[in-house]
Amino acid sequence: MNPELFQATLEKEDFPINARKMEQFKQYLLLLQEWNNKINLTAITEDDEVYLKHFYDSLTLARFYNFEQKDTVTLCDVGSGAGFPSIPLKIMYPEIEITIVDSLKKRINFLEILVDTLDLDQVHLYHDRAEDFGQKKAFRNAFDLVTARAVARMSVLAEFCLPITKVGGTFVAMKGAKASEELNASKKAIKLLGGKTQTVETFELPEDAGERSIIFINKNKKTPKKYPRKPGTPNRNPL
Image 1 (cartoon, rainbow, N blue to C red):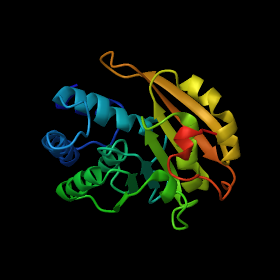
Image 2 (image 1 turned 180 degrees about the vertical axis):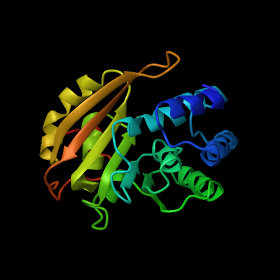
Image 3 (image 1 turned 30 degrees about the vertical axis):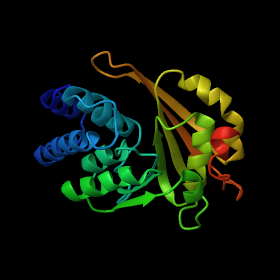
């Protein structure tokens, strides 16, 4: 998906794309490629693949979630890596307030440069483990939307993400194939942590780039205080 097709596809799908945003995506691509030579940010580095499998893929969330429903949607991206899906969404919808938490300081360093280069405001970056971040009072029940893309299995993600999702808010897991199997295996964890499955949206990316599923979990009650557990425990001993 070259930049021209990327823009045309977004216009066809009624995304609010414009020349400034296209320039920001171009700068994002160049910085990602530059930094990927220093630290391992992504295995996907070819121009067309970045536009399709990172930028466009991240934006598919906005097909199913209305980012213009109120003046400011607060989004927390857990394990964002090189900024996916939150930075493409921030470019497209500048009014979003985003918080990114990642356990690797080098990735946060990259994101600091990226945010400055793209001149983005209302972006907060935290070098932290998801388990520790989720136990901090300032972040519990704090966000309208909490996202995770290709980070861990669903039961683990639920323990990372539901504690920081507002009651009435939404936790979203962006997955590839076999999302339904993961979801079935995590029903107990989701319920225990205060969530309820809303819907699963499954679709094919353009250019035969594969199947994607987006799992939407409503937060309908507060998560018990003991979750998330100590760092490493959710992965070693999933709920």
